[in-house]
Length: 119
Ligand SMILES: [Zn+2]
Picture (cartoon, rainbow, N blue to C red):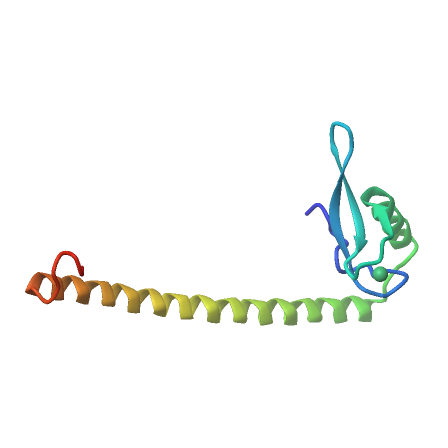
């Protein structure tokens, strides 16, 4: 993941989550974060990443906070998994329906319901 802080760190001006992007140099591209809300400020990826790492070195979360974080992550994970599972199940059902429709059309073609042009 090239932009691990994307959406996590908020813009200091408008409080919108930052997004990642690339700027072109002469011979290479450079990653940076910028406000997703349209502010013109941007910051080099390494500068922000290093600042967050420095900040984290000075922060020790309490066990209660860690447990809360873990339970929240489980909740988010299960919600996303459930949503994706539902989408997959719907897609699988549609595939079965489409396969049956195709089989039906082929049967009807073989019976002679459709000319070659129509089929
Ligand atoms: Zn902003």
